[in-house]
Length: 450
Image (cartoon, rainbow, N blue to C red):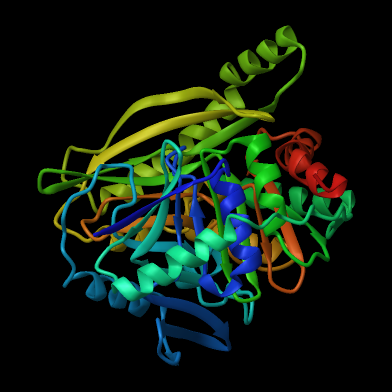
C-alpha cells in the first residue's frame, strides 16, 4: 500500500469538484459514506452499462482501449463477482472503503430486469462500477492519498497532479432556472390513477415522482454548496465523460459488515416526511405529528415488510430482525420516519444481494414488480439513475450503498425528481407539497447560484 499526505483546508466536496473540473477524465467518485468520506480517482478497471435497444457493457482498463460487448443485468453482476475473486480479502474497518468497487446501479436497469417492457434511458449510463485502487480520505491536516497494489509510477504521477490541483480555485456556479416537466394537473391525474389501481387491488402503495429540468454545463460546482448546506449522510458525486450524478441522499439502502466469516446487513428504509420549520415549537409539532401519523406508520410498515421479504431470500433462517421501527430522524429541510432491519447473510456474495434487491422498495411501492409497472405507465419518462443506488463494495464483501433520492443527474439536460408513497389514505395536496418540501432547498441553491 502506498500513501501520501496533502495539507489543505478543502472539504471533500470541494476537492471532488476541483477534480471533476480540472481532471474530468479521472472518473472521480465521491461518497460521503455516513460522514466517513472517500474519493475514488482513476480506476484500474471500469464497467459502464448502456442501453440502446439492448444492454451493452463498456469495459475500460487503465491504459488500454475500451471494449464493448452485449450484456445483461445478471451477466454484469456475475462478471463483477468473478472479477473480485483473485483479490486479497483483507478485512478493513467496517463502514470504511478499503479496496474494491465504487459506482452506481440505476433504477431503470433493475426495474427492466423485473419487466423488460419498462423503459431505460437511452445512451446515458444506467450502471457504472469500477475498481478504484487509488483513492483519497480525509486526514487531520488535509487528505491522504492511498494506492492499493497500484504501480508506483502511476501513484507518483497522481500525487504530483493533485499537488498542482490544490493551487486552483473553483469558478462560482451560475444561477439557472428549473422548469417542471409536469404541471400540477398532471400530478393530480397521475395521483388519481394511482388511487384507482390501489382500489382495484393491483397495489398497496406506489412511489409516484415528478421531475424538473434545466440546462447547465456542469453539476460539480454546486456540490460544495449543496453538501455544506444539507450535510447529507449518504451524499455522492460521480463524473463519467458527459454524465454526472450529484446526490444529497439521507437514505441508507444497505450496509454490509464483515464479522468474522459472516456478512451482516443493515437497511434503513425511509417512509414518512414532514418539513422543518425555523420556529422550534412548530418544528417539534411537525415532528410529533409525523411520529403519530397512522397513515405514515402504515406506509412505513408496508415497506418494512417488503424489505424483510427481500432479505429473507438471502438471510440465514431466523436472523431477519427489525430492532427499530418508525424512528424520527431530522435532516436539514425535513423530518423522516425511518425503520431499521438487520439480517445475517447465507453463503452468498454481497453483490448478488445488492443486485437482487434492487430497486429499493422505499422508492417503488408494493408489490414491487407491479409497482414498477405502474410507475412506468404513469411517470413521464424513465428515471435513469434516480432511485437507484450508489456506494462501494470492498473485496471482502463489506460495503455501504445509499438510495439515490435528492439526486440530480446530467446527461443532455440536468434533471431532479421528488416523490412520495401514495396509499389509499393519501391526501393529494399533502403529497404534492411533500415533493416540493423534499427538493425545494436544492432547487433554491441552484437557482440562486450558491
